[in-house]
Length: 274
Image (cartoon, rainbow, N blue to C red; front, side, top):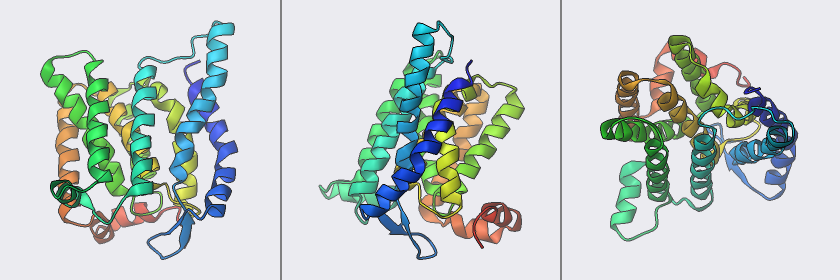
């Protein structure tokens, strides 16, 4: 029964996505992608509503059908992902010209308003709340919060080419699941993972862009997958990798790196229109 959140939300996303694409275009929410083609954005706004629509059927089954449809840690997922997606949407709507930690930090120091700084602080608050609900020592609490925050930002950095963030999410999930043989966290995040796959397909086919609302939601799911599955050692390894990607993305172009590595370049381009 724990697969039902994924199934119901996937179906809801399939129904929602095309009307949302049409409405985004009608309302003029379009932005040029890396090819210079104007596309509807942010399609990531379908991820959370699709999951919430799935809750209608899930709640009825749980209450009236007396079915066990809620996986462990389901509440943490319902708290963290919508909150982070909302912060991403604010960044989509109100962002200025600042980019990266240094740009947003400079805006704050000058007394200006920075959506990036707001997003970082808000994500940290949510991450600390989620991590405080998990068992472990104070050090493990801080470690989990750091993985959640840095994981969210990494997928924001990756979302510079069509389909890149959702591909990274799928590969991360495969790696975690195959190495740990643990699917409990997958069941918990399924309510938003289903819509991510649907939105990610349109992103990959260059029919829309996810925006920060989408990439942040994917990053939040990835962070949750790591902290709910990996032990302390695994989270420490994840933290080092995430920190390295964050630092590299601040000073160098991830897209340029991908283009220079033949295997990565091929994987990165798979599924895109030629």
